Amino acid sequence: MNHSIHSADRSTHLKIVVVALVAGIAVAAFGISARTGSEYSQTAQVVKAGKPVVVTSSNTSTVR
Image (cartoon, rainbow, N blue to C red; front, side, top):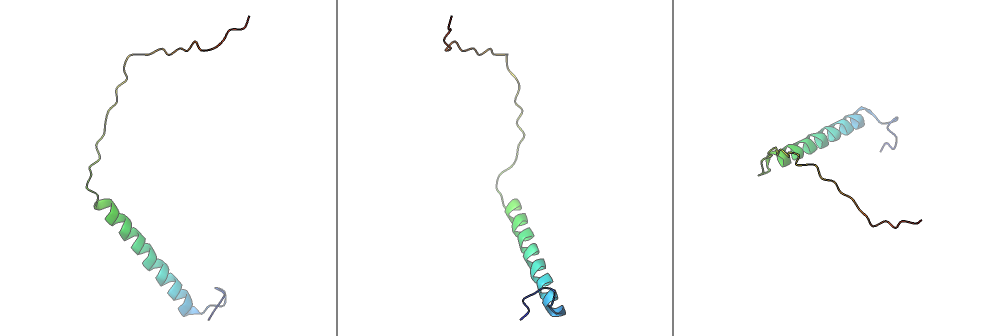
């Protein structure tokens, strides 16, 4: 068993590449299936601005 990537032979490097490739394909497939399996539709909503509003507060105490 090789404990270092530097001393690993060619077949060990190939195994690492294959496992990484399979894992990447699995993650991509899961993401695509989760995205296309949704039952909702996205709609754009327009929010229009109303009349201007002035908000004031007189809760402050005045010291003279």
